[in-house]
Image 1 (cartoon, helix red, strand yellow):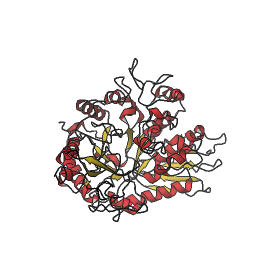
Image 2 (cartoon, one colour; image 1 turned 90 degrees about the vertical axis):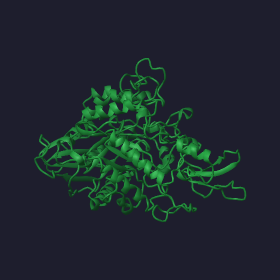
Image 3 (cartoon, one colour; image 1 turned 135 degrees about the vertical axis):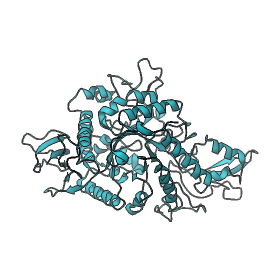
Image 4 (tube, helix red, strand yellow; image 1 turned 180 degrees about the vertical axis):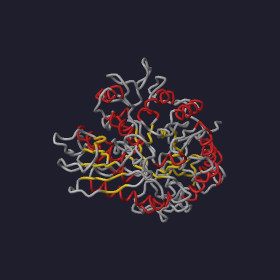
Length: 566
């Protein structure tokens, strides 16, 4: 096991995460090192220099553990290993060390709500039978009805269909049912069981001890359940009255996790918490719990100045009492890519209405222009920022994947009613003019696990690196300015008065002037024009960066953002 010591990047100190630019890396789709059509850690290691040049401070990995892949790795059979398709534990150790040497920190996913049905604990529970200690680690219950052939309650899976599956007992008879809020291959843990709590605390120590810098907690509001397992109404809001979402006792779990994280200087806990109630969400970042939570209202917000300002203000107000930094996310592996979303007539997003959004035609030119403007707006906001792989290339949502090639269990369990998440998980294009665009090495034995659009020939890393006005160049420039400036990242923000309600304008000033050095050492003024016409720029010393060209008379066009020095 590695001792972290001096191998941990020193930049930013223990609070590096407050301002970090974090790159979300979906291993299966990043880079294929061995030619099997699936991304792996060897591919990631070969491209670490690309991420260092991009200017990110940390990489967040989606699950890299051994898994039957019923849900793209979110069904974990061993929390202390590496999925063989991705590599070995030695590969992970080398990756962590190499990334640290480049000044890049490592964040990994932990999935505490559920296991794989192939996890040793669950196979032992099936073999042990009703009433056993092994079954108490999960939610096994008798069925309802005279023969027990009805589920124990009316809970529905997030992936569609009942949240319960009946097992066959060791003697061959129809037996108990087990709970799975996701797929049947993902049985939920019983967080009232001491074994479960101790196991996950040990998992945290295992990875922190190997040099991992942060843990992103999947489905963080779902862990604890009402032991009575009552029926739930469709309109029951999350909170203390809900039997499995945002229950008060979940905070006991995160207080114990924070105590573990605090044993290792500079470590961070990040929650994936989907909640509509800002006050309830804020409880997760109170003293002694999580360091930050994902900002889903911002991710889902339409391209509308009033709506964005409201979400920004609410986000800052939510985090301020706890002294936690805001997080800003435009996209991830579960939602449609931002270029496609912003190219539709309805630019919002809702996981439960994915089919509705896919009915809209996509104006890729408009979506790209808005995505560029959104990138500068987002990176100027106070706090940390997340970049989902391919976002920096301007990739769009692939909506025409043939049905027989789709992989997402959401697609299968809804019988195609929900198109699922495959379209945002298509492998990255690196080079060349034909698929696989350098994703796999020359002579690869298999095609990429999801098909790439041939039109992505213009969006490869190779092509965009040679273009001064590419999305990649914009991201590199913006991240470089953001890192060099004492005004950007965590710190104060002041809204500026605007004449047009479709414009967002604010100032960022250094918390400690003169601490960063470089040309971007003063204040930064961000102006985003979401209105229908060009607008004048406010007073400024110089233009630092724009998401698109200004008009001939120096006005800021619609769907364009500017960073100005003041």
